Length: 211
Image (cartoon, one colour):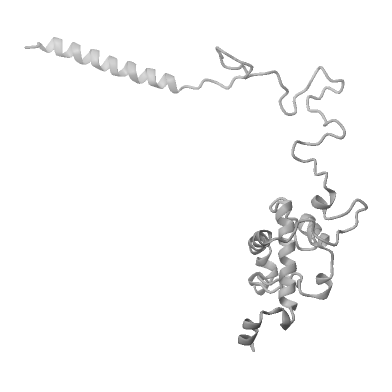
């Protein structure tokens, strides 16, 4: 049977052990003070290479600036955009192109319908007549795509407006990729045709029901 002294001694040792474990864990959580010195890296393997931080000075360049202007004519990877018509909606002379360079296939029109309903229909209306809920709530009415001016206007006009904005319509070039812009334009032409289509365009079996 253990004496009171031994029990007291064992409790002291246990308490010391618990305290030691706690302090070790606490030390492991300490991150230290901020330092510009890199951490010890046993095998750097070219992971850390000399470079200039943003706004850093430089003794190598004459003007003392570490940040350099790109070499004239430099084009970022993936941004060559050498097809002027496709990327601007204009020809080499800066004139708006009459016809979309993207064919109006069934798949393209479905994509255009989907993108139109997301980005355009909220203001221009699902059928492009300029009547929408936001207009009913007080927004200035947008263009009605069925008016003669827009029915006869160049496809490049729609592309330019979507890209750069016009009046109270903002630019959508950051939200809508180039191919989707052309798909929307092809779908707008379908909406215009649907709102101005003659009776002879309706299939005979459907025409009979309408009459």
